[in-house]
Image 1 (cartoon, rainbow, N blue to C red):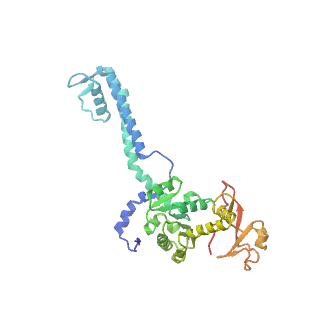
Image 2 (cartoon, one colour):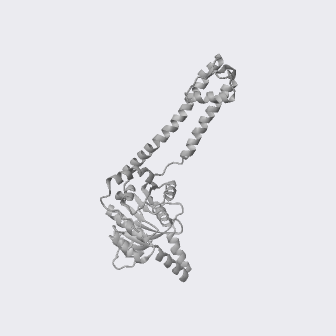
Image 3 (cartoon, rainbow, N blue to C red):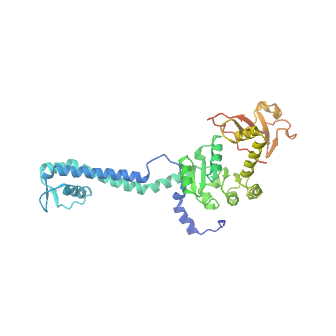
Length: 368
């Protein structure tokens, strides 16, 4: 069953959804201790202060009096430390000697202040955590423009992000959308902003600011989901470039009708690579080398330099396989190519440099 988001969604439901936004959007952050661990550290510090206070009282127990039996034992020392640090002060155990009173003034009172600071600091941290997250989220939304939205953070989605980031795109300009909170946690740990939710819903895509994105990569697990996501994404953003992956080749036309600019058929591509490897293992190795990012050979798209204007593709120093002219992708031997023009873009095969980034001007390869 498909989940279809109908227009005119109930206003109360939208408001309720907004209250959950900080739980749906996860921004990357510096590695810090988990909240439970932070609270545990504070509790350990408070316990340490309590034990230290009780030990001080017990050592000087002769300077204290208990209204019930006139003597102070170890239990009484812990009891006195507890009611004193918590500012309860029942008055049944009191310091009577000058030494005990001086100890209360110069030692136990500062310990009481430290104890209260620990407790108040823990409370304030819990209360302000949501405010800080909302502030970070609002700031993130205000500066996010022309970014890349990736639907699905599986093998395909992750490889797509790595390839795009190799062109110079910063991780801050990538937003991952996935229905699994664990997957989004992984994406956030790798430095990407993440949105938890069903990408077929327009409100989920709006949380990813898809309406202001420059390019959208759809790498869902199911072809029918990819169709619904493409329809929703195109409705929200008419100008973004949408590239989608499907498993079955027969679903590719449906994706294009739904608004995808380019459709990659994973099953047929893998099958063709397998068949090519059977017929020619060497050719299969070359194709696999081209697919892998950052090693061996890479296929890139670059602008034409002035020295190449007026030449034929075969006359350039690089190995040109296609010429992008306007919205057309022409083969290197296509008669319509003629000579290279300054406004053309060349698709070439180059030697990859391990660990080096490709020039930022390189764009994703278009499809016919």
